[in-house]
Image 1: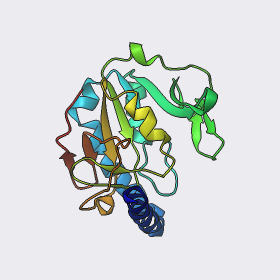
Image 2: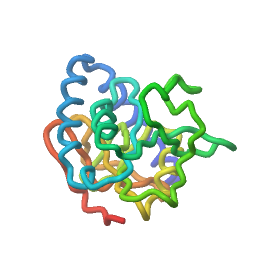
Image 3: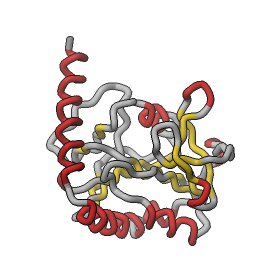
Image 4: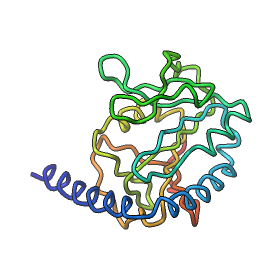
Length: 199
């Protein structure tokens, strides 16, 4: 019964936050996204990273285009998620934004088959989307759970950074044992060290 209550509370928060995010003018989200990315590009773990995993934003999510452009310029290894064989989430490497095309849900994803060998990745930082975050690094995702499965497989070797607007921060995100916390959350106003142990 407790699991059902947890899912209901997560569902309510997800619906409310998605509605709120969609209600903001795209121009505002664009401005906030630039500020968030500017802070991300100054983050020491990003500067030290040799590999960077990004996501393709949908429905007013924080944009990642400036991080992509900077990572390309710095010759970092760039990864994007995609559902691979047997419906398993995997990261695939790209070397140009032209290698992204709409996937099964209309979200831009890697078109090629250059599967990223996770065992060979060094100093990996993963920029993570979310519907809501709290200051302890708990994250509420879109609801499919596949992103958490992907993060779990990299927990011991990667740093997770949530990108969110300030209004997406809440007092508490209810979590289940499979939910993966982020180490940092970056908003247009601040960089939050969530106190999660680093790999």
